[in-house]
Amino acid sequence: MQVQIGVPELCAVIRDRIASTPHSRLPFAEFMELALYHPQFGYYAAQASQLGQAGDFVTSAHLSGDFAELLADQFVDMWQRLGQPRPWQLVEVGPGQGLMADSILQHLHTHHADCLSALHYTLIEISPALRAAQQQRLDRWQSHLPLQWCALNDLSPESVTGCIFSNELVDALPVHRVTLTASGLQEHYVTLASEPQRPFTTVLAALSTPELATYFDDVGIQLTCPPYAAGFTTEINLAARRWLQQVAAKLQHGYLLTIDYGYEADRYYSPARSQGTLQCYTQHAHHDDPLVNIGQQDITAHVDFTALQIQGEQSGLVTLGQVPQALFLMALGLGDRLNALAQLQATDQDTLNRALHRRDALHQLINPLGLGQFNVLVQGKGLTTAAQTQIQGLTQPAFG
Image 1 (tube, rainbow, N blue to C red):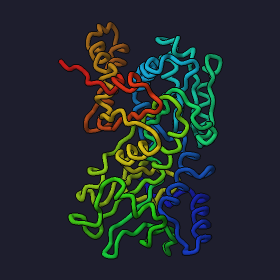
Image 2: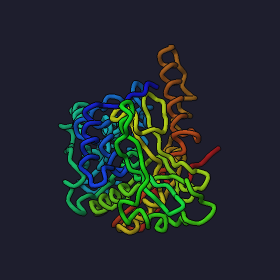
Image 3: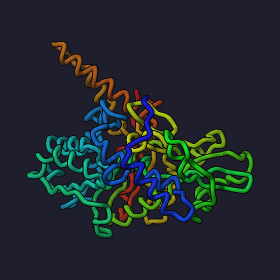
Image 4: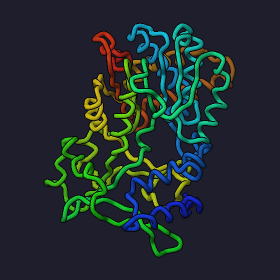
């Protein structure tokens, strides 16, 4: 991995922002927001093409169209449980390059035309570069259904009947970093450094918001008691709680489906995980230094699913279930797809190679050491009892 300072224009923006603050420092969360989401120079604005096999990281949607097709089957199940409303909505938050939307729409077009005919599809995207890529990819669907791009704030309160969903979105929301010290919990701030080859450094200081002080009590973690020791460092994702509250307010009748890597609070904040989960990704390599390659690398942290469930309940949502991605996809029929590939009688090498590639991708989606251990959280609002029970992806798949 080649280490650089980062995008010069972005570094200049961050320097100016630091200089404008009373104490010449930014909470790490504000630094992370600029590094990822600055509208001109942030990672997701300038590096939109650096996703997928040729880029910095791969998501489930990049591996195989099967992932999106199985999700589409789940959406059909949800539509039916809602009583097949017309219209109904799918709202995808953080659609990346539009790969998943394209595969979902193609699957509905081929296998569930009645569902597609009722659908309004909305893409929530803040990156102009990614929005342009999505619009180019999805242009062919404009004549088939209402397709729109907007900001989350543009959706009216309680306007969505359907499902709001995301895949690997919450892990990239800006996080606060905190460290337990002899004098209590302190926060990481980014400030100017004296080294020209490393213009930024971090310092510890008082918490920037009272929310950080109460967060661990909210999720049932006694951080100031043994076995936690001075030096314990971790992340707090206040942006995830605000995001979930905002999303819940848009939902009238339907579901919120969140797929991401992370843990429930007792595992996330285990004393053994004493340096947190923050990771940076570039060129399929990962490290834990966010102060290099600024604007040229992704920065992520695992998701605290306990916080999402609690915030959901406080925002009027009901937790319908949470399962590993592997079980979710198996319940939706991934095993049947593997069995069909095993029965394939290939007559030429190209067909065989495509089948082997697809089989490998399907196995990666359920690998318990990789994507298969991602969590799938399903929450609901305004649902009848029948609409809350036996969601297809949450049922136990039959083995053997």
